[in-house]
Amino acid sequence: MELIRRLEGAARECAVTIGSFDGIHLGHRALIERVRQHARRLGLPSMMVSFEPLPREFLQSAGPPARLTNFRERWRLLAGSGIDRLCLLRFDQRLRMLTGRDFMALLASAGARVVVVGHDFRFGRGGEASAEWCAAHGAQFGFEVDIVAPVLVGDLRVSSGMVRETLASADFAAAERLLGRPYGMRGRVRHGNRLGRKLGFPTANIAVKRRRVPLQGVFAVQVAGAPPAAGRGPALHPGVANLGTRPMVDGAQMLLEAHLFDFDADLYGRELEVRFVARLREERRFDSMDAMVQQMRLDADEARSLLGLPSP
Image 1 (cartoon, rainbow, N blue to C red):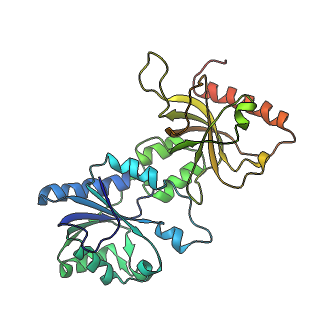
Image 2: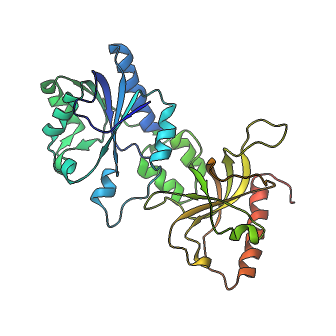
Image 3: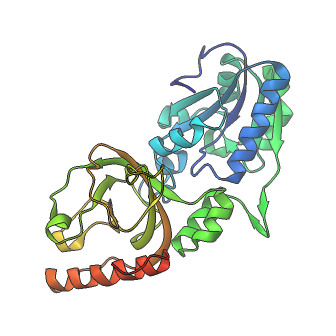
């Protein structure tokens, strides 16, 4: 998948889909599949147009919505989607002030032959251009517009907002149904202060790289990307993880810390995906380090039980 940073003169003709694509859920997958169908029909490459920061992060800067996927996570998910190009635009005041017609002209300049949007899509200054408006005016700019209907899972309409709700309530089974995969966070393991190792719970520390996370607390997890045990193929490693600011050490930044059970290999610099299985409790401050370690042992025992593991 090719990454480009501007629409003007981006490349040859293409089939395009546009959106924030936070989470890459089943609704997004429907858009991706539809634009790939058009690309195959026309014999053209497919291109996704998305944004960093996400539009709502820019427009609601004082209280942005929780971010389901940072850029690295979106890139990894899209890499296997069959999309040929990702055009990542910086969402700023200049882009915000474009009219609907201005943005349509940009798509035309990028060689768009067909543009695929969701039923609730809006763009242009003040959200003036709805999906229906695009469909009515696309021919003036030399492309057709295809509107994709809502995707339902049971009686739930799939959306990033609905995924956020399921994660906030720790309903990971419902989140998986909306996403089409287990929900996880991904990143490279970085060096920390090694406090966990001193306390008997070494952790893989991963920066979440987003302003707000959709969930916080202590969780039973499965971790992908760690080296397999001797004589075994790639596997998920069970563990327990804390996602929060670490109040016992006066932490200020959000950090994901995962302790892998029965595992002692070097993980520094390795890219891991931590998949959330069950929420154990909220993050909190303890009266002493001893009290915190005692609770960590209880958390580990509960996580082992939930993950079907015997006690150590």
